[in-house]
Length: 76
Image (cartoon, rainbow, N blue to C red):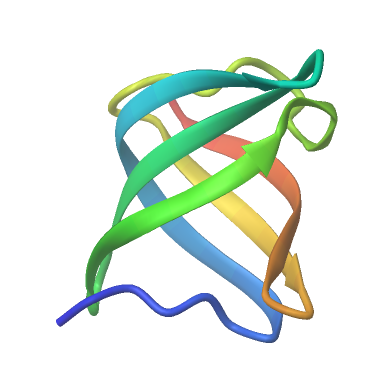
């Protein structure tokens, strides 16, 4: 199975890999994540992360219209 971002709500995921991307000076993180239903990729703007995401972290992501609006670290 593969990951499909929910339209809204929260989801707990494990970060398997992180890659920093700069687009016109704005910083984003491409995250390879693992969920109960599979794995996938999601791009997160730096400003929605409280701290820099790291491999192995368990985080809670908030979604609105299929886009990540917040990332809170649950486990390091």
